[in-house]
Amino acid sequence: MRVSRIQKPPGPQTVLGVVRAAGAGLLVEPFDPDGTPIPIAGASRREAKPGDAVVATLLSAGRGRIDEVLGPLEAPGIDVEVVARRHGVRREFPEEVRVEAARIPRSIPPKELKGRERFDDPSPVTIDGETARDFDDAVAVAELPHGGFRLFVHVADVSFYVAPGTPIDVEAQARATSVYFPDRVFPMFPQRLADDLCSLRPGEDRLVQSAVIDLDRKGRVVATRFADGVIRSAARLTYTQVASLLEGGAPAGPVTPEIGSMLRRAEALRERLEARRRARGSIDFDLPAPTILLDVEGVMTGITIEPRNRAHRMVEEFMLAANEAVAAWLSEHGVPCLFRVHEEPDPLKVEVLDAFARSLGLTLRSGKQALRPGDVQSLLDAAEGKPAYPVLAQVALRSMKQARYAPEDSGHFGLAAPHYLHFTSPIRRYPDLVAHRALRAARHGARARHGELALLADLCSRLEREAESAERELLDWKKVRFLRGREGEGFDGLVTGVAKFGLFVQLAGGIAEGLVRVERLGSEWFAYDAERQELRGSASGKTFRLGDPLRVVVERVDVVRRRVDLGIEGAAEERRRPAPRVPRRSGRRRRS
Image (cartoon, rainbow, N blue to C red):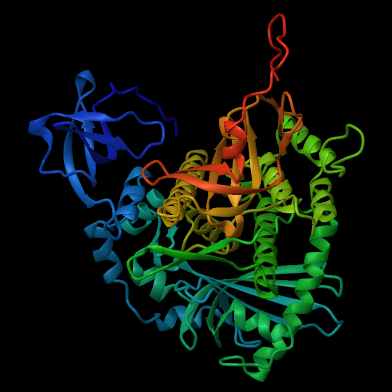
């Protein structure tokens, strides 16, 4: 299918912003950090008041009109509304989608149950976070007679309920992914599917597509098969419960002795899978994700950082194994699908990472050979436990290209995997549903209908990035708002970015990131060294480098533009001193 792109004449620009008083008139200050305030004519105010979040249209001559008042900026939920609109997040399902979902029978047809393989032994369980509602995968591990393992990964069979081209399918494709905000989810599928019929609830029959993977004692795959299955989850477990058991705690809650025994086998398999993956050079960015603590109105009250435990790592290993197994099977059988590809990093970014590593006394690679994923993992291992590790991991992560979806199975650099795709989360990712359809059709000697895969890959990649951007923006908004009113307070921080104009500093505990502008560093001139990622004082030789700890003070908080300006504690006195004399240089200053 050939797609032509017709350039449409630009129409009026829509702007989201907050109303400010400007003399006798009003301005709309855009939420876009680079936006320009828009004067509003008197007849175009729509009863908007200063402090209201609004939707405005930019007219000719740089003026604008207010089209919609969303409510006071401080009102609960306004931040979610603004971010969702800015990123085009689809929040409501069309009527035809809701009607179609409501018509899906709750009971599974007896004929469908009879035609599927039942997986009851060993009993599968789901393992998710405490607040999860959509359980789209269940796992179980059996021991084989020769001492190996049989891994079962059962994934909700969304493709049974959602046929290509139906209203539910069209809407899911337009969303491509669920969007997760701290206090709510905008799901890819209506609740009846996402939280009910396709959610692998304990004690209820659920349709699944199952990957059954046999592995030897060392965790090497020796056989793989796939099946249309039906399961009844034995328990809904949390990461905390499973980790407690694996660390020697007594079985609690739904963890029966049988389930506990199965989970210990699963942990033994996890250790072997993880060891093999690391041995082949797979990169593991073990960066704990911060969890935002909110009150009943959605206002951030604090932040906590929970490191990955054994249960997190177990589920991750099993999902990786299933994704690789499906990708390899489809690729070997020449089945068209959406693969998850990750290309080698940009050489220029590798040079930045290499230089930063050398500045820490570490080595990224020897000689000039092409970078291998194992080189990055070895670097991270060498830095583990050191104060600069979080920054080094961030620099390494930024040196990587973004993974994307593609019709070509060109492998995944970060995982050091020759074949990879997404299969285990069809409730929340559209490419996983595509993989389910492709796998089932191929197993039954047919071919799934996908449409133009290249266009679908681009769409899913773009919408994934947009969703991630929206999630980050809302987190930033809540973090910045959390700091408002705390101007003058001091915080420990870490330099996470260096630029000509200043230092980016992450406040301890993941509270927020702010900027120390170069003029706040002191009275002397600071030169920027891109290779060493540092700012160096021209007179004193004082340096500020990536990874340096700093004690900073919050100076200014701008919620609308999500900016935090920081100063260095004690630098105010330094700036009041006379600037040292710097010898005048002749000729043009060399660019650094």
